[in-house]
Length: 368
Image (cartoon, rainbow, N blue to C red; front, side, top):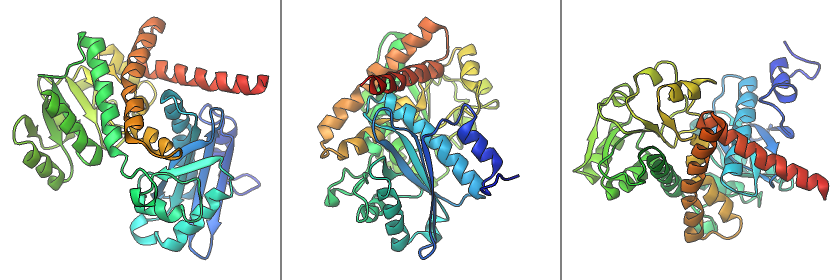
């Protein structure tokens, strides 16, 4: 079913009527010469220009691409609010196979589309796009971050993403066990790519025992070669979540890691990882709480990367970024305290705090 514009009716209902909507602007972009088809979704500019990455993905349909852009943009509003950034939430998706369809001309055309928004949306890397791609986009659009150091950017953001997750783990330990130290704790990491690799180093430096898994054998071998002691590997995530004596589970790969199948068998007392959208569906956060498992909201603890790309807009300074990312420790503790005070799961508490910050910003803007 479509409406008079030809757009799928369910997408328009999401945009204008559902709780998942409320977006300020959605732009459909097309450049026939390069083959570009993209969606730019701006959820909120209450706190400042919308900031979020560009995902390049072979969506099964245009409707699926629009829905993903809407969902991701909304998530960025909450992430940026909780990170204390003066940015709203936005996201862009480019429809296509990045291995086959990505060209310089396409990226330049995309840069022109972002530039046409006049700074309401600032773009960066996401799934399917990389630092080198942002360097190309930036040739047409000054509202581009996540560029290479050679081009005035901050480069790979995985270092600070991992550092932020580590701070979230320390806060979780402080809340649950009364001590932020992870020495002697057993931490399971699912996914040891760019972020997980750095996270292992932080944990081993503190003396934690680490259990890892990854679908790529080379990624596992790299970790085991770098850390011959204190790190073991298991076959897959199914085995990892059942490891006896696991203190912390860190999903650092795909979303939806916490669901009706995994939560009942999870042995860890804390979940704190870098993956986005870890909760498989609404209600999972309550299932975790009912089992006595402390959940550190993903968009709070994995905000180190967005802190870095936001800082790039003002002249990147790593020490300044790291100081901001270290505050994830205090933010996570504040969420746990609010959850206890309100009698709700931490995920709901984080949403309330983020929503209040955005509402206060809108009220202040209206009052001026």
